[in-house]
Length: 418
Image (cartoon, rainbow, N blue to C red; front, side, top):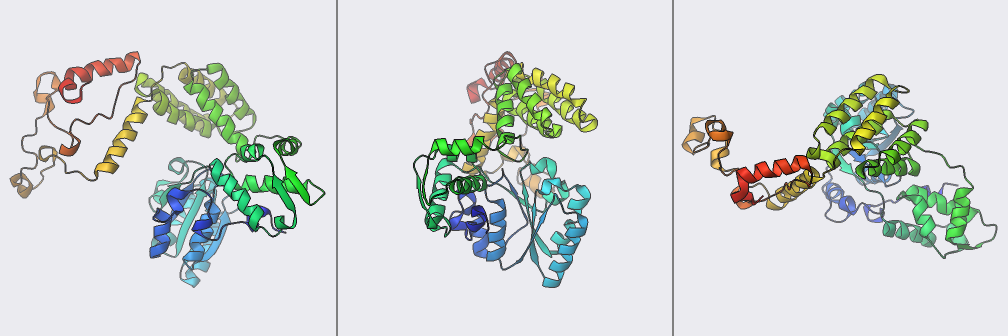
């Protein structure tokens, strides 16, 4: 008998749990299937959020032959075999799970078939594709981020299973409490359904009442391990990042030690610190980004076991550094403004004027070259007219950014009110 998660795998976008930003009416995948034009795609998100399901739905609705490979046990030979079969069919959809595990040559073997339109690729990854998928392949794919399922998504999912699954309908199942069921699923639909099925099978009788105590008892009876693709992986890295953000080097070192003991990829740890150095420290201490980048480069060269010292040094440096998320907030506000305002015309004096016609149209006219003025500064308008005076960056409350604020106030007090 198939597992519950497989029996209940959605067949339509409407049946997919969560991911409304991709699947609801009017969303990007909905529109793609409606017009029948499917690009190559990379789905990035944690386990059990629907990456494989969406690939199967896309293949079904596009009337494409579906091929599936796992990067764990497949290589160039298997890829070429699929490409050959797809060529005979005219076109096919190839789904590659954990595509980040393919090395450069394996990823490169896909490029020709994608270019010729022989295959539409859908890759699934739990790792940031910017780091793990090579640029040539990434440029040929649209990247869509899938999110962990929300509580209400998970609750709706298990209720649907109880109402529609033929196997579960043979029993009288009452879920008295669902907090533990939802908590231990960790936003993972597959884990939720596997756990539900496990709990149901633990009862000898057909009249079943599930509560938090029963779910916890069953979970605790199974060996607890650090699964680099599972819940503990995400819990520990979350605690690690939050400890650094919270300026607690002792807690951060503890979670670092747990990850190292479990054999976590040191590049994964270093990469997360590289992101944190900009997101949570930023210009409060610009050297943090340099340290984190050097750490990432060093662990790539050295690896375990010696790289534990480099990781530990960087953890301590970042945890004890002053913090600011001003840069993070600034770019989010700027992105929001860019989205809401559309493509505003660039002020004429900032435009490039490589041709005579452009010069006649006043492109570049009245631009003032800052280096010709005292202090290498001259006050002119740089934003589009509709956005004039918009403030995206607010320096943080730390010594380094207070210096920045003072300088901005000296330059732009009248315009931006720093």
